[in-house]
Image 1: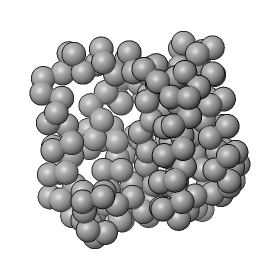
Image 2: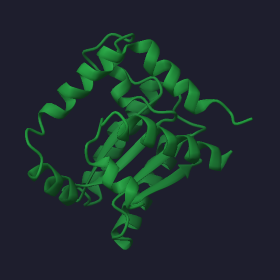
Image 3: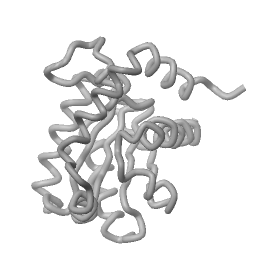
Image 4: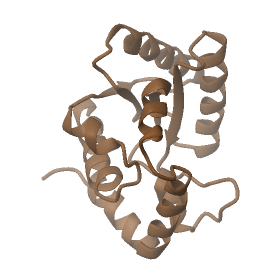
Length: 182
């Protein structure tokens, strides 16, 4: 099962994030094979944040890795529990001296923006096959944003695209990624 979650997440990155340009910087990292995928067995917040901190250290030790996606295929299926994990992960990023070096983006199969309805297609900009913490190098992100016209328009573009395609489109796409291979 370990490889299945990573395979499905790679497919999601390629067929959603890159294909629909949700992150205009992802294509380069996919093509350069600089994304590290890690499956965490954690089901408790304490274990999950320890795995996240270990991956920060791994990024320090492996400069060829541009970014890391930490997947939780057994834990944090409840979105509210996942948000608790995100809060603690961000706090520990600061407490352990990684603030300014790494930042966390997060994705979840049931992601709902705070100011959004559950059935808003815009939520699919942050929905993934598995609960996921995405560790991003801040320096690389700053450099990428410097060369991008109007980076503040990225979320607006993503929301418009998600709503234009509609919730049924995104549901089918994610369900197709999560279907077990025959």
